Length: 431
Image (cartoon, rainbow, N blue to C red; front, side, top):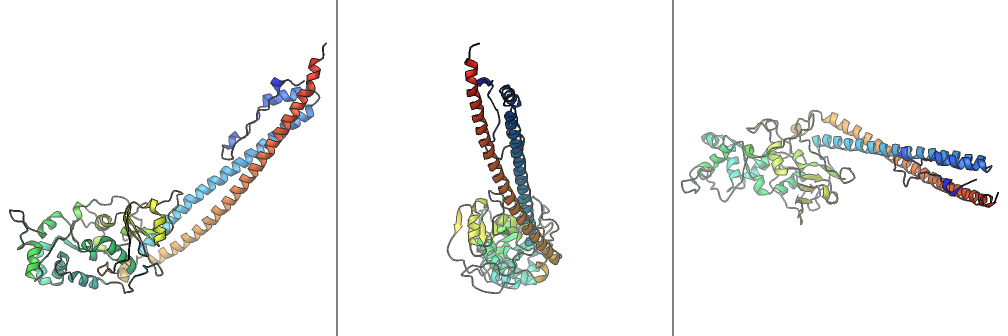
């Protein structure tokens, strides 16, 4: 006979398929054996055995579907990690010969040819009352330069001439971002060079007979107003890794990531890596052994991000920490600081790199690698879509099997209750 305290079928039912596959619906076999014994006493052994075996089969089916779900989730996670690595590799390779034709430009951009180094120098020399104009005048006339060798021996050059940019639109944007004052800044290797440019009398006033003020007066260019001088040895340099096998020694900066782990759409790279530097300025330029990229340009641009469009840039706002710009004219100077209005017609900008210096030695090989990586990325995206479809199918099968199990448990409980009710008159009959 069935007794109420023995009618228990303890089967654990998971609330979702995300639970550990080892924890799916364990049947309490000791309690089930009570059901079997009581059923056997009532002549219901066959039906009790059927309940036990079928519930065990449903449990095993659910466990199988749970393991498939976990397998597909692990596969998707792995494939997304590999896709992110491919994205980074593509961006790094593209940085070696960035900005092909067809990139977006500002709507109001004035169409003009890229500026050459000679044209950049002429633009600087037109700033007649600037320190940069005097330095360029000095370098153009070797006799004056020899006379003032002690004054300028530590001067490396002017910011606008120390970097080159292949794309004229990007050159305009970077130059506008820095501003005229910074583009005209004089760059010195050491602080001794900075001190040589300006001499003070005992009262702390500028002695305009010496330094760059005296030099300007001697060539008919009186220096007016303030000017910036950048000292390389006093800059805090970048101390991370460099992109492997890159002759330009671009910085291996961490790519921005959205909350889902993906790189923001339209992200092209970091501005500091989009400057081409003459080979003589790449290695051991400063007294501390660093080159121009990790000192001067890292100080000027830091982790300034470059995007294809303004919409891409604004969508990536959560990932932007040190400013950003877009090829269609958008500029974010710093976190929360937006530049609005029309793009300026920037006359002084970085010159275009020569064909010889703009293309790395392994240009063709890099192009082939990018094409191959993009093909792998497309295949991986298809694999991710396929895994998502398999995951959805496994979850659907799990839910169906779970519903079947719950229905079976309800019917089994109803059967047990009927057996218990039919046994009650037998217990009440006196001996």
